[in-house]
Amino acid sequence: MQPSSNKKASRRGFLWGAAATGAAATAVATLPNVQAPSAPAVAEDAPPPPERGGGYRESEHVRRYYKTTRF
Image 1 (cartoon, one colour):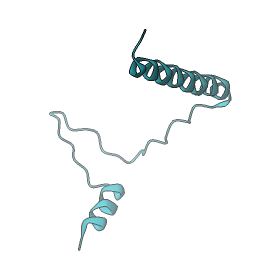
Image 2 (spheres, one colour):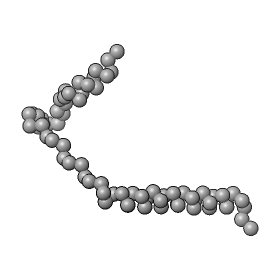
Image 3 (tube, one colour):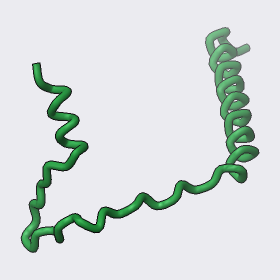
Image 4 (cartoon, one colour):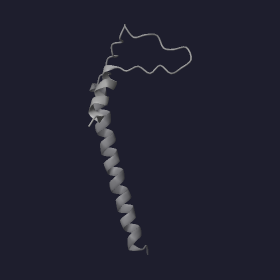
C-alpha cells in the first residue's frame, strides 16, 4: 500500500500535466493567426558605428530615461 503523500504527488502531477496540455493546445490553436511584426524603420541619419567598438549615442530614448531619473 502506498503512503497518502505519494497519492497527492501523483494527483498534482496529473493536474499540472493537464494544465500544461491545455495551455499548449490553446497556443497551437491561436499561433497560426498571429502575424510576425514588421521590421522597424531604420534611421537614415544615424552615423556609422565606430571601428573599434563603443559607439554610445545619446538618443531621444536615452534623454527620456535621464529625465525620469532626475529629482
